[in-house]
Amino acid sequence: MGVWQQIAEYLYLKKKDPNAPKSRWMSYMHGINRISLLMFLFAIVVIIIKLIIRKH
Image 1 (spheres, one colour):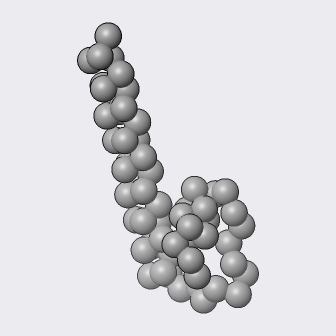
Image 2 (cartoon, rainbow, N blue to C red; image 1 turned 135 degrees about the vertical axis):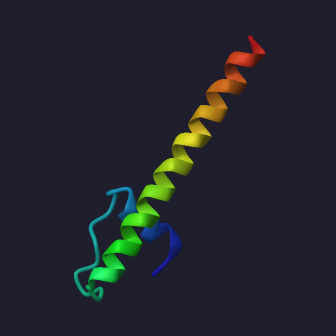
Image 3 (cartoon, rainbow, N blue to C red; image 1 turned 90 degrees about the horizontal axis):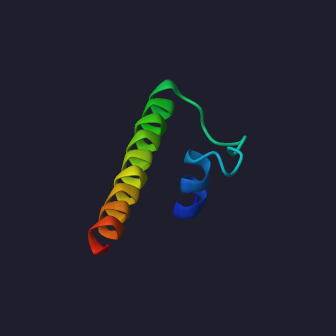
């Protein structure tokens, strides 16, 4: 599976693959990845806002 497809699934932009293996540990890993990706995107937004405010 491609990286962009996986990110789209984490952000709920694409449906999950029904043929993907399902296990408790895999779902934990995907949950942690989803949290870290959302935190990263939030940090990027905060940095951009701070840069915009500083220039004015």
